[in-house]
Image (cartoon, rainbow, N blue to C red):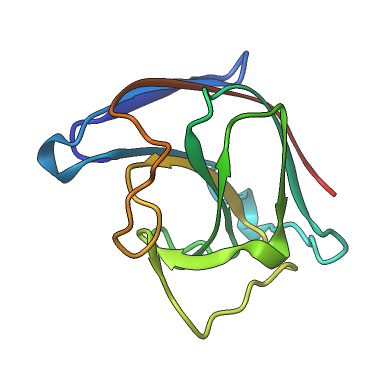
Length: 149
């Protein structure tokens, strides 16, 4: 969570709700899967990306993140999307390597070692640029399905 922001996920419906504040250097919230047990990972080398089926979102801009390392705050592979439609495609080829919304160079996505997924709602895009489709306050996003394509 960012600063004093808070959120929860209803595991029965996939609905992620919360309140974002910029108090205490905040302005973001996120949810992520835990690393897969026993060092397991997904070999997604035969896939072009991930597809999300959504409800809600109100056109706000979120980030979908794929992790190829179990380093808790390591490099992650980020793609922004506006929650305007019901199906969002996240091609691996469009992902940006980041650490805390800062782009990094010289990194390569290991599609044979996918260990987790994350969704973030943040006032920041990349490298200090502000998210134009962000609002402080309450938000909701329902994640109905996540699959590869």
